[in-house]
Image (cartoon, rainbow, N blue to C red; front, side, top):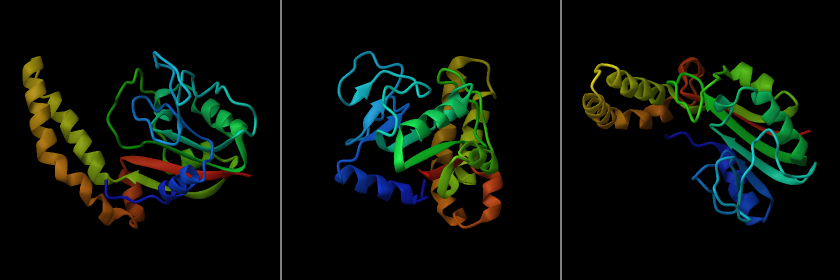
Length: 201
């Protein structure tokens, strides 16, 4: 929160220009002007397609923009998704991917991966980098850790729920202070999440 990323403005322009944009692992968070991809959709239509990111139902060089937000941590082999993004993107097409770094375990349905910024950049090495960095700052990371910590203090389900909700209320403002760490390189070492924004060479 409080971190403004340039790729979002580029996405808005691409939507206005009628570009073909896919959002891998979108789930219930559909973005108008994009095609949502998720393997767990019960029904399909022109804006919601049931598919895995490792096997996209699009031809080579057919997509203008790909979003892959908070997905790579949930797959066993994230490189397969990155390779598939490279395949479907047009020359000069753009992609945005992010994943957690300092962030508690969250299964959806599983949670397999965490990468440093260097690790994420290496994963996306076949793309020309436009930008990379922190998408969730250290305050967001700390807030999530404290909420999860509050849950493990009790064994009874009702007490765990109460403790979690109290913690969520108490730490809520913390994430908005991430904006003060945007230019702090040391903050990357404690970032809640990292991103890579690139272009097909």
